[in-house]
Image (cartoon, rainbow, N blue to C red):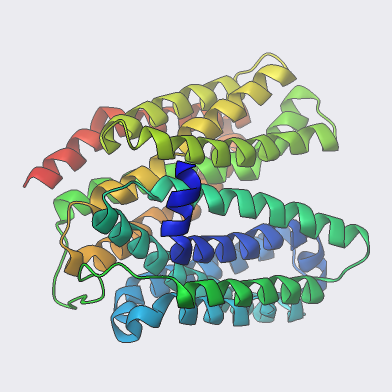
Length: 382
């Protein structure tokens, strides 16, 4: 099968995507235990995660230098750094300890994030095949599997520290795959500190990534609340919202692997953003539970291709010596979606309700085909 061949060809970064999915999927399922262990209120947890995101952004900015310094060993070394940080949140007993632990974990994750995306882009250039959607899809599927496995472990009484330690052990095994996997030799390792990517390409591309992350974050964090508060769902029925989003994101990215072989990235980004916008509007203004489920499923399918396609488009239009820097800048801009998503949804929900908040997400997604894709294409042509 083509997918298996592509997965084998990109097994180094694919293992890195899987390792990252392990951590964040496990973390998402452990939040109900981590908060009381560290004595965190909702506000305190939010502030700690803001500190963690700052650590990730700083690491992403510095990632090209780390890749240049480590060379071919960058993926396994940075995966081990992230694995070493896995257990730290499970040790935290206070806000300060939790914030520092998450900042270190997010920094390790941010370094690996940039390098693994850069390595996928280098393989795409060397092999002449699209691989970005496949690798991002693998992340989504491993994230979901790790969340489910962690939930089952919690049911048996497992505490956060042993769960994180078990996930870290699997990540160490994945680092072995990264160490033995081939690396594309198109000059991607020769990152020049002074070589700046074209901002006419980076800014719109990064903003597309930002909106993609914002849409994902909004649905992940607020779908269950919307279903329970506005449509009368119980706890189990409310959990179907984020579960549907994760499942359709993974399926959509695997389908995007095939679409990328037939259509140009801007075409797929346009279509995906429009589909996601329709899904967000349907979910927000759904007359009943099943219509809302359909909306979140459509949102996941459409949004799934936006971020990986934006990475692929930009990375394919900068020189090999600028690729890591370009992806670093895209990631830094894009991660602002994690800053903006929660306060935007919370503010709009408080003022006008969650339905209107999801309507705003639909409008923001519509800006991608209307404004940002044409701007990004002009930047690529300069």
